[in-house]
Length: 433
Figure (tube, rainbow, N blue to C red):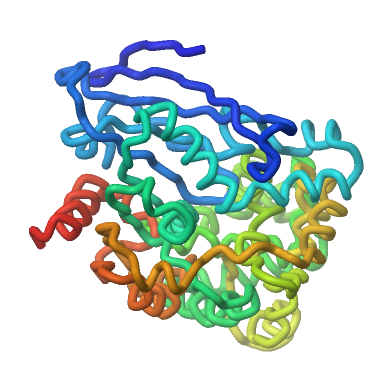
């Protein structure tokens, strides 16, 4: 069933596709995947090639644009665009604390969610491509985790691609989650230091807030338990171009004077809960380490385990002395399934995924070394979310891949300067830059 309608400058068609839950069992259970087709209103039914967009995550639906916003406007000059809600997200068959109990208990839920990684997403794309393009290859644009999916696409089904464009999303090909987080914590420390250099007044503000939380540990209006570790995880904001400013403005109005003394303001609590809650995208937390799983070694709550190797992140020690409180980000840890009411019902499911072994390999290094698909990637210097050195190593392993390494943007470069980023990547794949 489709529905077609208009926004300024574009014609939109909502499309729904039935795909197997397990592509190795095509006669088994099926789920629905939603995608929004977008074409330029001025070009109408022109025969343009297709571009499919895979957003970051895991666990996020495709961007909801208004007209020709950001990179979409540039893409519509050359393509018909398909904005894909990856399985379990957006308007695709949802997977969250409300729906997953339909599967059964935690074991059944974990087995179900094991089919929601990049390998299954790419096989969804191939099933949809056959229906949408009649079998013609298309261009894939992968942002962040979408780039992980695009890299798997090059490994598993390069015949489906005419071009691959990757923004901030070249994954390690063979690294374990432990390698990912051992590289991540030093970046988090650098991002915190850069924030404090920009806003030195925030050193004392963050310490004051953390000391208050250590004593009171409030439960926010939506049920979120704001611990010191949860407060530290606001560092996830520091991976975006405007993130340091957003964190600063959040910290500056944390306290208000009340008849009982100083307390955390309602505005601060609401904004913190909005920043930290996974209610809108629980799969980000549940599958975050599973996206790195390959082979027999479990991920085993890697971010939480490797954090102990970096004692400078210990808030209790920082508060006992005069060290600045360090923020963390892009690190999902087991305690989050206690603090966040949207995740608490999924704690056992997440434990089972963390213990899971036998994950299929995601990347075929021999096939990537023989790649013939034009591919370009923007790599953000000192990207907090995806390690730059890992990305550069992967770029060297993919035959013909052209890179644009820049410190002009943070991880959200496609959002803040989409037309320019997309134009540069297209030029690279076409030999024009």
